[in-house]
Each structure stands twice: as C-alpha cells, then as structure tokens.
Image 1 (cartoon, one colour):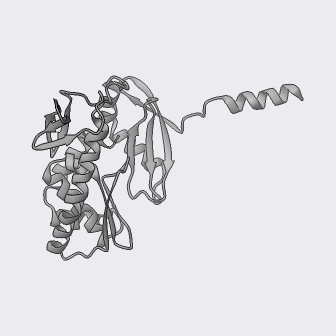
Image 2: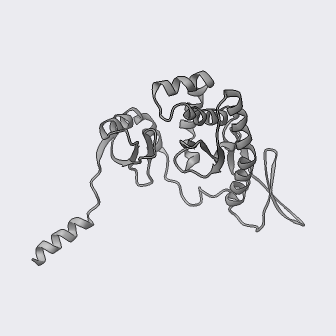
Length: 246
C-alpha cells in the first residue's frame, strides 16, 4: 500500500509529457497545445522554457495545430537562436533603443533642476521618481498616446469603409494586436503606437472587417484585401516584431 502511494506521488510530481515534438534546426522541441475558445486563429509562441506553445481556436484541432507549427519552423529556429532575456535586458535605460511609430529611437535621460526628463523622437516624459529603469514611465506615456490616437483613427477608417462600431477601447493584450466582439466593441493594443502607421491602420481594418465576417474564412480575407491591399506586408512586419507583445 505504501509503495503504491509512493508511486502515485512520484508520477504526480513528474513533469507532464509534451503533446507532441517538432525537430527544429537539429533540436527536438516539445510542442504544447492550449485550446482557447475565444481565439479565432492558431497562435504560436516559444515559452522561456523552450516549449512551442500553440493556441488552438475553438474550430481547430491538434493535427492542424501541429501542421501550423511545422510551417513556422523557420521562425522557431530564429527564436531558439536568441539568447535568453535577462531581467536587465528587459529594463529600459538611458540610450536604450525602442520602437516608436515603426522607427528605432534612443531614450535620452536628462536631469534638470526641476527633475528628470526622458526624451525620444518628438516625445518628452517627466519622471515622477528618478530611477534606473525608464520602462514603466515610458510605457505609461505610450499607452496615453495610444488612448488619444487609436480610437479616432479607427472611427475614421470605419466611416470610410461604411462599418459601424459601438465602442473602441485601448488595452494591454499579451497575445493579440486587437479584437472585435459580436456586439461591435473593438479593442486595440496600446503597443500599436510602436508600429508603422500602415501597420496600425491594417490592424484597425482587420478588426473592422470582423463586423462583416466574425471568422477568418476566405471570404473574410477577401474583405481585408479589398479594404487594405498592403495587408500581407503588414502581417510580415507584425510577425517579425511580435516580441513587442511580450
């Protein structure tokens, strides 16, 4: 009896076996499937533990998810080649380069008699408290910019495309650039202020087209292509810079 109990406890403490495995650049990479009923497409990310995690939409299945991961093997190989991010690397300091409106700009910290100011591009951020990590203050400023700029731009595009929306919100999403509910609420990621203007507009149009088709069917993508011919170029930029979401 005691031996049986010990065996059950030992099995419970073992790490869960991966759902599948994928050979990427000579490395056997574990693959984990996570079903999300709210997801409308397959999403792939590489976790800090070097696991390929595939989000499976409600209408998807594991076979298609694994095929999707195989098609993205080149992207996974590039991610594996990157060194693990340290805590220091995630901090923003004087001289750190960040993306702003699609351009890499350096943060400049200046100290005045009245306090400290961080400048980048045409922006200036006054620090409440002096510190080595500038990221919280700069990201808060970027979010405020997004809240002021993104909703009017989306409504402008909606009017030109003759699409109605009920509400526009700006949020911090970890796995998507935007979303659209059946009730007509569009949510946009504040990090869109870090993207080029054409990419920002693409995401707005992408979500607006869900007012016509609440899916990612071939007909939906025809709506997108008709409303925004540069959509493939925008998708490539987003794929290359998806790390902004994390």
